[in-house]
Every structure is written in C-alpha cells, then in structure tokens.
Length: 499
Image (cartoon, rainbow, N blue to C red):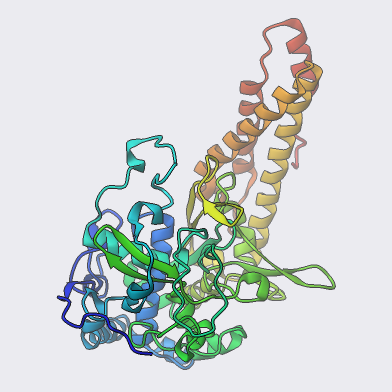
C-alpha cells in the first residue's frame, strides 16, 4: 500500500524530551525523566490516564529489557533496568515525534480517505460536546496543548469509548468488512469500563520493574503468542495487515492497542476504528484486568467492572485470591499476581492500585451518564501480609463480615420505614446509609489489614465497624414520636458477641 503523506512536515514535540506525563505531587515529566529520576513515586491524572500511561511505559520496558525466564528477572538490577530503558529511548528517539512524517502512534494514511475531522471535545467523555448540556465550566473543551494531545492519543489507543464519533468510512484494508457505523469500545474499556489493577513499588521505576513480564510468563497466558514488536517500531499499514494481526496476538498489542487509527488536525483528529481486538468473553483480556471462570459446565469468563457504588478495595478478596495456597487459578489478575509474588519473594511490602471509569452503553453509543464516575483505591500490604495464606483467610472473613453488617443495616432501616408505611422512602434511605457505611469504613481499611496479620486480633476493629452500623441506623431512623421510638426499638440492630 502506498501513502501520500507529506514527508516534509516539520518534526515537533518529541514525547521523550518534552514534559507531558502527569506525576502525582510533581507535575508533568518527559519519558526520559520517567526512566532517569528515581524520586518520581507514582503516576498522576485520572484513573484512565494512569492505566493508559502505565501500559505505554510497560511497552517501552518490555522492548528495552527482553527477559526469557524469572531467574533473568532476579538478576535485573534497578540500575541495569534504568540504563537499558534510557538506551532504548535514545535508539528510537525519532519514533516519538508528535508531528512529522511518521507521527507517534498516528496513521497519516487515513487523511486522504477521511470525510470529517472529529473535534477534541467529542473524544473526551468528560467534556460536553454536540447537544450535551453543560453542567459545569470544567466540561467545556478548551484548546489542547501538545502535551494534552499526546496524552489523548495514548489514552485513545486502548480506552476509546465506543460510538458513532468514528469516521468508519475510512477503510485501509482491501475487502475489510469489520467496521460498522459505530466503533467498538477500546480493549481496555469494554462494555461498561473494566477495573484495572497492578502492584506498585516504592517509586515509579521500581513499579515498572516489578511488572515486567518474561517470555516464560507470557507463554503461560495461552491467548498471547509473544511479546511482539512495539507499534512505534513498526506501525501497521491497515486494520488487517500482517503487522495488525501480530499485534492482536502479542503482549505489545495489548499494552498499546491501536484500537483507533488517528491523525492530529488543527482543531481535532482524523479518527476511525483501527485494529479489532477480542474481549474477555472470548478469553482475551488485559493483563491488568481481573479474569475468572464461572459455571460448572460452560465455564464462562467473568471480570470486574469499575463501579462508583463499590470502591475497588471491596474486591480485594477476588483480586488477591492467588494468595490462597490451594488456589485453582480459576480467577486472577495476572499483572497484580506478577508484582505481588515478586514482592513476596523479596520480602518487601507492596501497594495495590485499582482504578477505572464506569460508562453507560446504549444503542451502540458509549458515554458517561449522571451515575457514572471514576473509581480508584490504593491499599498497602506489608511483607508478612503476602506470605502464605493465613492473612488472606483472615481478611476474607472480615470483608465477609462487613458485607453482612451492610446487609443488616439495610434490612433494619427498610423494615423501620415499612412499619412507618413508607417502604419506598425506606429503600432510598437504606441505600444511602449503606453507601455512607462503606465510605466511613474505608477510613479504617489499613487498620483492618493490620489486624488480620497472624498474631493480631480483629476484635477492636470489628467494634469500630459496629459503631458505624449503629450510627447510620440512628441517623436514618428518627425516634422523636412514640411510634417512631417503638419502631426504632423493634428494628434496632443487636450484634451477637462473636459477630
């Protein structure tokens, strides 16, 4: 396939040299700074941006530090890891220009077939565009800086919302029939917005080293054939060319997906659906995505979704199920398992990060509705927490108890209002009280984690959670009249000594 893109376009804004990656409590940094400054602790930005950039950084480390076995990782020091990544960036410096004849992660070939330019605001689900009502000034799309454009491109590769904003009249593969009028969601997003999880080290460089896959580990995944070639080293020519097919089945294709083909324009993008990836239902999933099997006969796959009504820490028992000694490996998050087990081997503590963004999907269009939002949790585990399975068993029991406390609270409030002949009001207030209970319980999460360590007692922390149950019951159920007091006493929660 020939392309008539302009080879004389000025090269501008190199992502290796220019600051564009948000770092918590620091500001924006360049790719070179990420791999040279060990004072950088963790990524900043929205949860979706954090995952997208983490995946890009992973792709760079996988290309820079190919490892065959776990023993090879054992011998990889922080200094040799950093040196290899910086050397790789020097080698491929010319592939990271945001503008130029071969712009970073963009497809100049689509311009000649494009029928429209999609405004930047239409590509950002947090901004209002078209007929969307503006609720706050922050929803208005302002002109983007080059740093923001770089971030948008990296985010869209895996996390592009599905819908009709794509210009799918653009087809580069002859005879390709995989496109419809509505683009599919990015493989990192899925139908409702996946929950993503990974292990964090003491700084960003250590985090990236902890999460480096070996060829041995990749071969055990089943659905991936190899590490593969980073897309900036060899971009596909079309949606279904040999390079595109290789990306579908490689780790690189999962880290930087090219689910969208795009090209920057002055006020937006030329933008269409790119490579089509399988979903978790097909057994193809993101390394940072929880995946499991359910059912006795069909063994269908299941996953975890970002849920604004359920903070990610409440799913820790699922995410950490690999800590069980007799686990059947039916459920796991490969990325988290990799990092946690390495920390366990090194007798080091680990931080578990989980996050994502909930979307609504309707009639082929994916958008953020009033109930949709981002979710994020950070949980710190000490070295003794991830040795053996006793801590995990204790923690699983306490989370189960919290679920029972919440159910008891809901039931008590609902029955109070049913006695008051206001059942509908009771449902709403019971749901609100349970949400408050979970929010207040999170304050004591690290204390709960410590209490579950073998040798410690959970008696005191349970009492704190019981106090929260009573508080939310009393706040929701007034006892100002004689009848109210009678119904309050009838439905009030009494815990048994061992509950």
